[in-house]
Image (tube, rainbow, N blue to C red; front, top):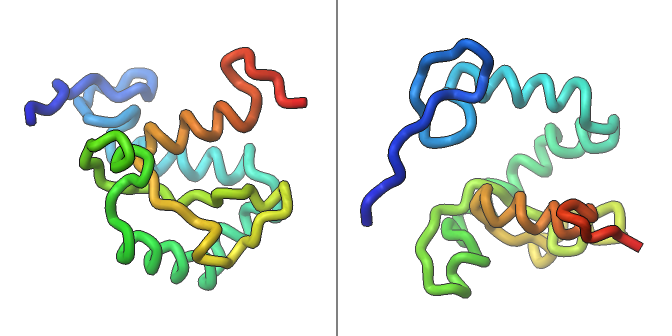
Amino acid sequence: MPRKPKRPCSYPGCPELTEGQYCAKHRKEEYQKYNHFKRDEFSKRFYNSPQWQRLRKQKIAINPLCEYCAREGKVTPATVVDHIVPIKEGGAALDINNLQSLCKSCHDSKTAREDGRWGNKKI
């Protein structure tokens, strides 16, 4: 299957071409900024904990393909482990049965739907 052409890194002034939003150098910087300024303290501690890191690796090893794409007959590598029932809504944080492997695109779409983006106000 043909791949999409690479596009310029979204970091201002960076000329590197990348398949994602940022080149490898700026992806790390942007992730660090996000963690430092936008994540709440619980999330920072939880997602950096050894328990979460181990469980995440285990889930990706068990199911390395995006579960949403697989339902549509597409084969896409999973890069994100997502809670089916969000922790903030009472979902079990470290229960492997409450996790799903997703590609970044499917995870972003799911998060936007749940958080009320795209005009879907959460009531």
